[in-house]
Image (tube, rainbow, N blue to C red):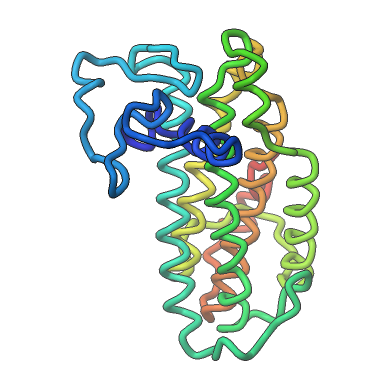
Length: 256
């Protein structure tokens, strides 16, 4: 199945099976869709409009769980595009020009390079987010639930520290800005918008008790991070922000 469907749950299954020393084969239920050389792109199991969750439950592909998984998958793809643009923009900054991970450098190529490991880290965490979504708490066994999860509060604190250090390098913002400011910033704004949609998809799952609240906390803070990172990337690429006129003053971001 595509990443936006049931394969999100394979990651914890694989790590758990590997730890147990169980022999892995294509016949292992958790590994359906694998070959001796890895994944098969097609499995034919979803041809009738249903796909599997990590707990083995089959649901229609238009189920709210798959809506959330698809949004998170799209978010990871958007971040991948942002990474590519940041890497291109950081070409003038040699890798050996190390920057302190906890403090944002002055805007410039080094700033774009500073963002790269953070964006990769977000993509990796989104795999854990997807696994948690693909394991509904109300219909999954304790065994399955123990293999998934995310410390949303801790990850949110990390993001807040990054937001604060970038914000310290930027001029105060009192009005709306237009998404843009060069390719890296525009891609980060797109990531922010997709992250917001991912969060909206997760809200009903949290309210139904099917998804940990920490997932929503993380996605909420991640979208805030992308907004500030987009501003920081625009400054790092030497682009001025396009602001809404002061005569139409309103909330700066619409972020909550």
